[in-house]
Image (cartoon, each protein chain N blue to C red):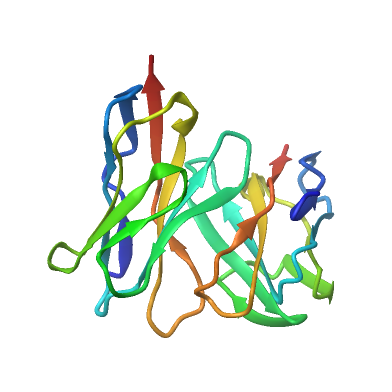
Amino acid sequence: AQSVTQPDIHITVSEGASLELRCNYSYGATPYLFWYVQSPGQGLQLLLKYFSGDTLVQGIKGFEAEFKRSQSSFNLRKPSVHWSDAAEYFCAVVPLGFQKLVFGTGTRLLVSP
Amino acid sequence: DTAVSQTPKYLVTQMGNDKSIKCEQNLGHDTMYWYKQDSKKFLKIMFSYNNKELIINETVPNRFSPKSPDKAHLNLHINSLELGDSAVYFCASSLAGGLNEQFFGPGTRLTVL
């Protein structure tokens, strides 16, 4: 079945440590790929997106993501996490031929002092 | 200056009632969306309008009726509210086309008692 999977429901990272959030997709053709962040009590904000080209994508707030076709993955990374990064992170796709975002189930990031 | 605003922020009501949520965007976008986020944070699109025309209508009970009086507004009316309608409803907007960044409102938390 077509889906977007975020295997980690919760992740806790120490402030200053590196972060990687996983995202896998299952579609016949590679969809367009996005990462959104939802801070507590707020709406979602786009961090970055990948359509084609360089497989390492830079986004806002120091985030980057790497597209790996062989693994059907689009993992989000940050070299040094700040306490303000604590939020819910959503991987999302726009399947080819469609005009709608399909979201993964989200990963809650907790940042410990 | 709020880009995408929703009213009310919180809505508590009894089963069987009818309620509306309003959304306005001042970004000059052509396309607006309604999403539902359930208690497990799963986010799913409900409707999308482009230039006041309905373009996405997911499998949503017909008790839900979106209305777009103009490009800047997209309201959601819900008839005969049920317990399962309790969720956070997000409005979003973007330029036309499914690949453009979507800007989300702060959400409306609906609680049906």
